[in-house]
Image 1: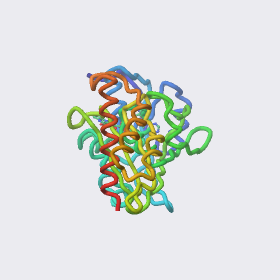
Image 2: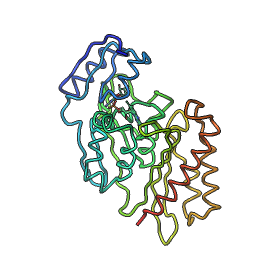
Image 3: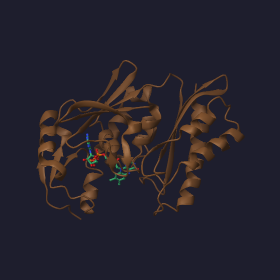
Length: 287
Ligand SMILES: Cc1cc2nc3c(=O)[nH]c(=O)nc-3n(C[C@H](O)[C@H](O)[C@H](O)COP(=O)(O)OP(=O)(O)OC[C@H]3O[C@@H](n4cnc5c(N)ncnc54)[C@H](O)[C@@H]3O)c2cc1C
C-alpha cells in the first residue's frame, strides 16, 4: 500500500516549522519517525496534504540533565533511549518500556516526541510519562509553554496540542536513587501493541511502600493514572489483601475497547494482573 499524495517540507528551524504548520493549517502534520503516521496514511486513516518533517531541526535530539530533571528532545529515538547512559542511570523504566516497543527497525526511527504526541492509547510512553510526573515542552505560534503529561491527553488521538504547536521535549523529574520500577506489558506477540500494560514507580522504607505511582496503557482511550490504587498501596508492605484492594481500585477505572486483543472483561482482568505484577516487581528491585 502507498499513501495518498502529499507535499513534503523539511524546515531547518523550529520557528520555520511552526510558521509552516500555522500557515498550512489542519492539512499539515508534523512528521517525526513516521512509524505511526505513515502506516496511518497507507491505511487511509490519515491523509494530510502536507508533512512537515521536524527531523532536520537542530537541538531536538538528545538527553540532557537539568538539575533534578532529565530533558529528552522530541526527536530522540527509542533506540537512543536504549543507548543512553543517562537514561540507564536515572530512568531505567524508560529503557524497560522502549525495549518492548515494536522491533529494532521501528525503534531506530520512532521518537519519544512522536510516541507521546500521537495520542494513540496503545502507545507505551504516555503512561510512563504520567507515572513519572513528566511535563511536555511545546512551541507554537503563541510561544513556548509546558503542559503536564497528566493534563495532555483528552481522548483517543485528541491531545492538548494547539494548532501549529510542536512538542520539543519531555521533561522528567528523576526519581530517588534506589526507587523501584517496572513496566509489565501483555501483548499477543513480540512487536505488538499492549493488550494491557502497567507502569509502577515506588520507593520503599523499612519494608513498606513509602511512595507509589501507577500508570496504565491501552486500558481506556487515554493513558491513565491509577491514583486510588497507588494510595491504597502506599504505607503497606504489599501484603496480598492490600494488593487485591489496589488491583480492584485500578480495575474500576479501566474502560478498554473490545477489539482483536480481547473483550472488555478480558482486558480489564489482565490489566489488573499487570498492575499486581508491576507492583511486586517494582518492590523487588527497590534498593
Ligand atoms: C510494527 C509497529 C509496531 C509498533 N508497536 C508499538 C508499540 O508496541 N508501542 C508503541 O508505543 N508504539 C508502537 N509503534 C509506534 C512507534 O513507537 C512510533 O514510532 C511512535 O508511536 C510514533 O513515533 P514517530 O516518531 O514514528 O512519530 P510519527 O509517526 O512521525 O508521528 C506520530 C504522530 O505524532 C505527531 N508528531 C510527531 N512528532 C511530533 C512533535 N514533535 N510535535 C507534535 N506532533 C508530533 C505526528 O504529526 C503524528 O500525528 C509501532 C509501530 C510499528 C510500525
